[in-house]
Image 1 (cartoon, rainbow, N blue to C red):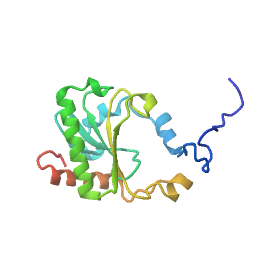
Image 2 (image 1 turned 60 degrees about the vertical axis):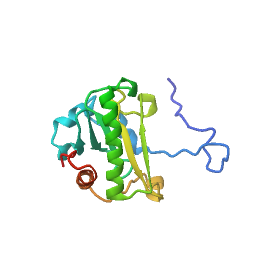
Image 3 (image 1 turned 45 degrees about the horizontal axis):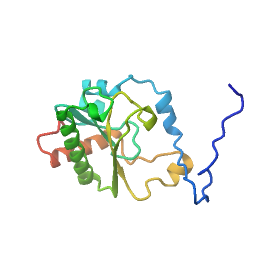
Image 4 (image 1 turned 90 degrees about the horizontal axis):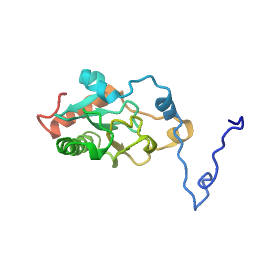
Length: 186
């Protein structure tokens, strides 16, 4: 162990380096990843709570859709199997089909309610991929707007969210019911 602090440098550490990658630091996320008190698997605990308290947007037979408690952008949702499963290849055929269906419905609800410019959809499988709960896969649906990584986020480490998480959850649950009648517990 050394007392010399680690200094990150190398390719990509200079904004004017055309051959390197620029780094976008989000140090505010480290507290969530390392110090936040939480269950080893919050995705098993969430469905035990009322939808409004857990920020659940819709429930299915094998998966549910929940608002991210620490969103990258307003409306950041996750589709999660009820069963704790780490890898996509371990899902049953029923879970795979419903996860895909819920992802499509989440996209429709998001576009219906918020009209984002784009959307990121993806899975982080394993701890090294950025998965904060590597033992329980979850599909992210992150709305994106032109300029959503602006001065406030980049320079001040502050994310501006235009409404509370409960308001966002209510908006998306209503939109879900409108685009997929009969599938929401809103």
